Image (cartoon, rainbow over all chains, first blue to last red; front, side, top):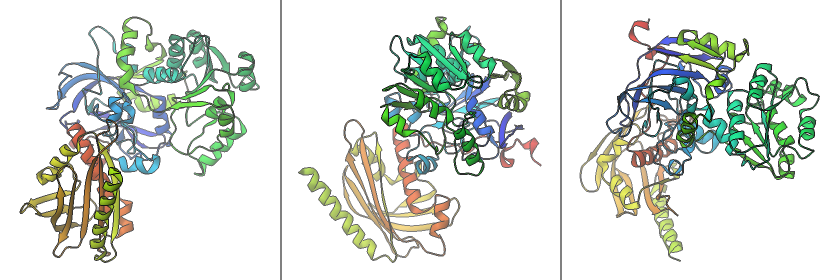
Length: 390
Length: 192
């Protein structure tokens, strides 16, 4: 089968590889019908995610048709059309029982890597480095799905792929980011980044009762899209001070909650952002957290900073004094996708949200390497790429 | 009070293990614990049936049970040599603990105890493993084995993690045999 493989910084290519097999009794094999490229795939593309190996198959936003099941699979059946969450959960450990699926104890075969780097290992992820399990991803014609009864959402007939594909990651991620803000009626939520996760977070924040959402980015196309979702927008390149602007817009109080939907590769132009780039280049830092610094600085006293943006390593110059001085609450982490999928499918069926509005590019697998470059260079107003597989 | 006594007893047991291990030249020690969502009796029963151990123990090639207390172990390290030993169970209490030591001549002398105690709330059981061992300097260099996660401490921690996964889910997670774009994994017609 054809699969999109990683070979190094800015090097991805299609390879003709063996088809996946059932390896464990709770596995299924899925014939992929649609997959997407995620903003977090760009962290891998840019070489900032540790423990990648040449030849790893990428992709964690995947859906398709079940074509084989292991002997202990009970719920999922051959022929089912399923969306596959990006995190792999066993469904049986303590964390899975309390719906903390992305903290699953039992799916990462390489826990010793994550134990050493993070203290404890979280759930394995599809196509996202060996520290996160080294599982082959879904930008391929077929994918093996472990514990498929837990890691799937069966989609009813008649709903097109594009409407439900993002249940695999960005819709639950945006929703959990908004839920983590603990929004109360009348609240203002500020979101750094207006990429796909932020677009989902804007709509989720409104669904959860926010009065106003402010989106901060420097790409016009993304800001236009945010405006269509009724967000107030700030282009940080055309603003003297994002912090002053946010303070002005909130009567000096600051946003009630701040979402960092950018993560480790912020494109800021501040002095600290420039220093971050220099330090990463010489290996003194791993992440560029400029969006997070601003979010902490902007947030109101006693407010919440919610972080769906991905971080991988050690952050430099964090304004922890500001966080402490204002008594901020921090909520973050990989999304417990399985917890949110059924709830959000219902919202899609009821017409409360149609996440396909973020799609700007539809391609076939052959064009995926080019699409990575396009997406990474932010050319052609690329916001979200969907790969039609079969 | 009961807990204190229990801890004291366990401490004494560990000391006697350590004493035994002290006879080993240049011994190393392992202290590791893990929480498993099963009862102490379930885990003990599973573990005491040595026929179950190959289901989760990394690199265990064969385990032959000779009697109620004697067994022969063969381990082939992924990046290292093959090692063998005879082990004898020297103490056991149903649903509580199991102690063993190697007997006869072997390159990897060891003595260990595994305890099963009820965890707070609904967490299940805390499994604690204490081991003392010697490894031959030339054959398995300590630093070299740590680099590939094949020093005994890393192996035993991995084994506890795998025991937990097997007992809680019925399988040990793996990616061995999955596709990749690496030369050895390419489809046959693509190889050159």
